[in-house]
Image (cartoon, rainbow over all chains, first blue to last red; front, side, top):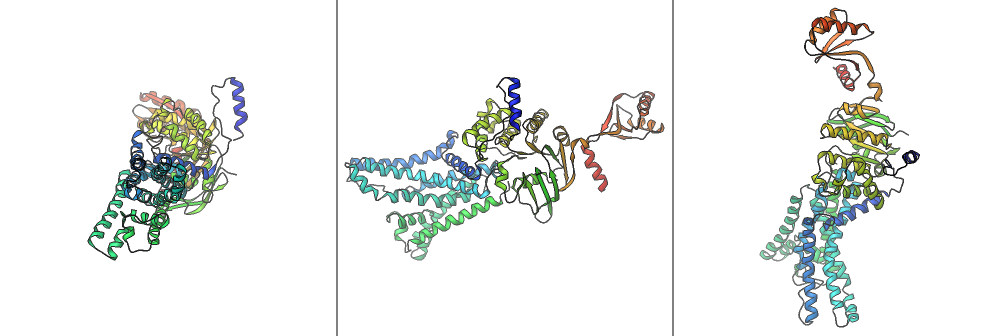
Length: 302
Length: 304
């Protein structure tokens, strides 16, 4: 676009005014594919929390985040007022016990990130920019995983900070709690990635947001129902196997295996499986869902 | 290096739909009209140039880059206005165009500056801060053009840019397209099924029909004067034609117009006399030019 420069200068000096410079070209850097992916990631992460959107778009993400922070805050407050009282929530059982809230967030925000682009055919524009279709899918997946992580990490961090800062001896408490850090960071991470992959895979298959949300909720409900009903009605191998239908069971099992101990509320400890089975299921779901998402975007007409 | 080149470019959908059939062409910069009936393969061609669709066989290049292997590099320098709606209703024009500028690789500050500039150029002012969902069709088309221009592309691909616009909106959009092509100096391909629009803004014409290249030539060569005089009368075109034939002219009736072959000055007087003799009301007389429609009509007749 160097040819435009003298043209522009001539016009400026001829008019002697700078009110209308005419059209100016752009000679600056073009940051290419990597920057495009980064832009999409950050924009999607912001969208996951309704930032820069209407108030209505903020209700679910911030509502759920608040509902997760409240029990964490209350737990910290009780612990600081009466240290002897047994805590309802700890790092290990926090996400499991509040998994319904996590499910609501996932079911609402996965479609938020991808449905509109399909429905309003913005995908045509994304795909005609400096990125590949797989880049789009992976940027959205990364953004959703990051959003789920941030939302679940926030209450864990609140627990951690509360216990340290409200303790009688901050330094000693910090030393005590430091050993829990893998769980504080690891548990949200273990939840975030598979949940993002599987919910995005469902959401990517329909341009209708409501259908996507319904389908994701259905998977959570049906999975939990299969686990609950067959777990109660049968015993032994079938009862154990049915638990794996609950999407949160492999997540808690993986958490249990990698960063923390078994908890009473989860069926993981009662099941007769080696712990790696849960991690294998979580990994398999993540991989298959990611492949399905990539496949979907590869074939989608733009 | 041609702006666009295609070699035996073929695209089939399934086994029996052929959208492009061995298209071979070279295009130099300018405002290029890509014209053809609906389904002639215009959109398919543009999408292949963008790397959105893979050709079944053959190959194509844009700005010297190969469309199948170097899609992302090409798309950094190409702006695309799709035929269909493609705007998110919940964002404002400013937010969306800035976002698309960054998607095209502009740094954040540059994307904001260029967004303000291109929105001004396409004529969106106060409304640019409102969500796009509330825009009229004309405003939406402007946003679509703005997002295609925000990264100062070297090539602009416009697929039916006047789609859904009223006559005034069409005029404004065509004026904008002409400005981007001439004043902004951006090579532009305008796909349209409306020959009249292509005639008004383009310097070069690519006519495709059934996925094949029908003609590629400067617009001027299509619109030269012809040796035909068009005589429009209120009633009695047939009678007039009969009179003229009787006086030894080659005259025929088309719609309500009598077309007369003109080799010298004489037919003008004969037409005047014939109209006067018959007592007809003469509406207009005009020297016919080649029209782009003829291109397709002649071809159709030739094929039949």
